[in-house]
Structures are given as structure tokens and as C-alpha cells.
Length: 145
Ligand SMILES: Nc1ncnc2c1ncn2[C@@H]1O[C@H](COP(=O)(O)OP(=O)(O)O)[C@@H](O)[C@H]1O
Ligand SMILES: [Mg+2]
Image (cartoon, rainbow, N blue to C red; front, side):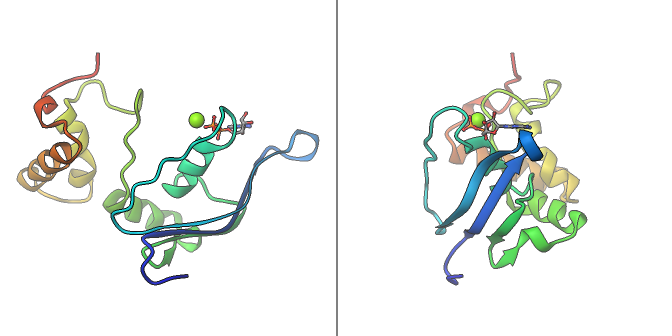
């Protein structure tokens, strides 16, 4: 692994189902992401983009290979450690779902920080900074419709 990578996939393979129903989705995928780099993942519907995203985010474990996040292979961590690492360092912004409808945009973004023990004030500051970074500062109070 190169030391400068933020995230590195090494020989990652994944299949759904088994036997006759086996659907092999990823076969020996390798790539690395550098700090500050922006990548677009393109592919036809069903090509495995969501599966790969779930593996990158630590939500799904590959059957083979390593997912090295800032030097740590997250596939070898305990569930508890992987959850803690995800909560502290990995964010996934979904387009359509997984926002809590009772909460505003600000409160949805604050939630992981609060769950990891940060104060309301610190979580609010963080949420505003993150929303600003993605051009959503004018939507802090917005709710899903
Ligand atoms: N939970 C699942 N069980 C079985 N097959 C699945 C499951 N999720 C996705 N697949 C199949 O895996 C392939 C990749 O799906 P997916 O990662 O959702 O692709 P994409 O996001 O590029 O549309 C598709 O053939 C899809 O039908
Ligand atoms: Mg998808």
C-alpha cells in the first residue's frame, strides 16, 4: 500500500447469493484514492456501483481483499471498531433516503457527531461547516419533503 493513500482497495471481490444463484459483482477490484481527490464512479445500472460504495463505506464486507482506510484494513476490524471508525471518519450523503424526516438538514448532519460524544455546540459548528462545504448552508433548517 502506498503511504499517501486515503483509501485503498486491494483485490476486492464480492458476490451475492450462492450456488446456482451466485451473482458475482466485483472481481479483484484495485484502486486508491488520494487525500482531496474527487472521483466519479460510472457504470450502467446493475454494474455494482452501490455494492462498491457500500464496501468503501464499511457497510458491507468484501468476501476477499482489503479495504485500507488511512492505513487500517477495515475488513480486519471487529464490528464495534469498524462502526466507531465509520462514525468518526466516513460520511455518506444519499440523494433520496436515509435522512431522518423529523430532523432538519442541520440536525441530520449533527447526529453522528453527537453519537460519538461531541457537545451540541461542537456538533452544530461541525454541521454548519460541512453543509457550507457542499454549498448547502442556506438549507440548514430544511426538512425532507
Ligand atoms: N441484495 C442483493 N441480493 C442479490 N443480488 C443483488 C443484491 N443487491 C444487488 N444485487 C445485484 O448485484 C448487481 C449489482 O447491483 P448494484 O451494486 O446495486 O449495482 P448499481 O448500483 O451499479 O446499479 C446487480 O446485478 C444486482 O441485481
Ligand atoms: Mg446503485
